[in-house]
Image (cartoon, rainbow, N blue to C red; front, side, top):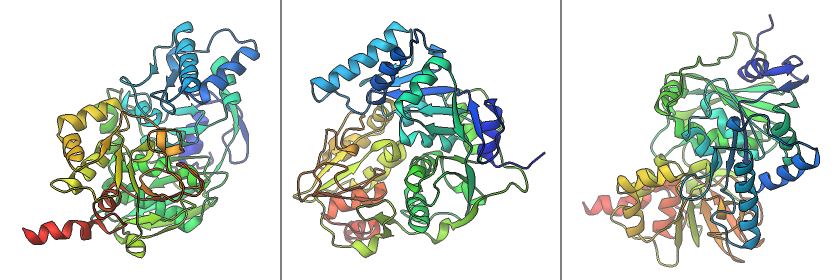
Length: 428
């Protein structure tokens, strides 16, 4: 039998029709179909237009109000109402809105709905976040997802795989964000086009699941169709923690063919910042020292985890955000928000002068809750920094990890986290 990469093996296990060979067209049956308050109403309209009356399996559909939630205007409120009504009419228990849910990709994992060997279809490009859990998250358009809602299956082209071999251990202030910014810096925003990124190697053991989520989330920013991490004891323990039944990890076959192989030594990385207007514009944080910032944003489906909030609190504890700088911190889910509250992280962050939001995608895509004005500059832990992404076309966004973002909040400019902490350490 032909040796296969991880993505091909997972696709083969879900194939209804066709063979999981690169370039082939296959029809797949997903484990979960995921829609939000932007993609959902479009899919519901097409669902009705095609004459469908019932979803294929309400238990395997997840609807999350996260992009325009809490609703900033009447239009957004209407979209959320349509999503809520679709869930009610069709008995979809997995409907989540402010106060109960969070940002869809983080929430899906938290709920124990994605794990080893599974497939998620989502009408959002960052569905690839599921790759962190030894699963495949595949983004489709809303019309495609309407068909998936009705039929429980869709066709797609099987991608080639690109192997990313990780070695070493990350040094201080280096996170999963820096791993993916380094990869995109090397291969460009289309370097993984028509491919699945496969992450593995001995360095994987040094990356906790939150770090893997940050990496997987931005695979699409390298042009990838999807991505997947090898499964290991950390991912198995994470499944158990989330109440999931044990499932064998999916690993590549010996001799599996890859379009390319890329080696990343985690120990050689330093904190990176991606200059606008592309996630591919990564440079060492020192190269941007002195770059003024107006807004610091920590959150989004890439970096709104408890790990990120702990890093921010450690940077801010006993300090104040620089005059003229505003900071917005967004826990990715209600559960993370409450955990951060219980640990005292939110109080520490608020005492430093930051605003803390309910979970939402809001400012990340320029929707609400932190939009930039003309001429303003932000440093953010989000996943995109295209022109106008977070507000006015004449604003700009630098992408970085939570350590670097919090350091910039203290200094009022981009600065290495170690340098931001130095004054207090010296005083001690």
